[in-house]
Length: 234
Image (cartoon, rainbow, N blue to C red; front, side):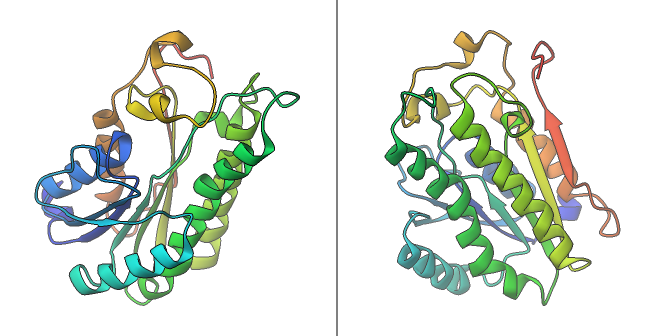
């Protein structure tokens, strides 16, 4: 695997913790040159990686990220969009301002990354990875806004795949319950991996699958990965 990824240049958003941090760490261990970005660096950053602070809700911050990436990394071969936030609210009780924030991070943040980096990537080819959720494919009580944001992200991913054929490979990863600090940073609502009751997988297991997809031969595109705890029904 390291032979396939060694020397590649990767940008990973949402990389200060959770799945993003695990993917960045795995890429670096495989020999890739990795630039991490997140709105803060309070998490444990992966060793051997560079870091550029960026709030993807701020267009100027994304412009600054693009400039920094060009100086340190050049044009990425791999773009991983992992930044996201959760919310757990009833639709008849929740706060529309918080709903807008979820879409701003989960959808517009990913779109800003695409708009900034994909044009240059098209000239050389590469991979774009979106971290979605099984929630995109299954409605559930109190999860309407989060699920809708991830469903939108999956449509964006598929559209990007079609628009960039055959230059780019586009992968959507849809995890089930993952045991990370994601639940500690939800905009509203209280959940934990344990309280959901289906069991959980670890972020390193998700990262392993991402690297598996990225290391496939260049003529093969693995476009969708759904991974969940064995006991999770959806």
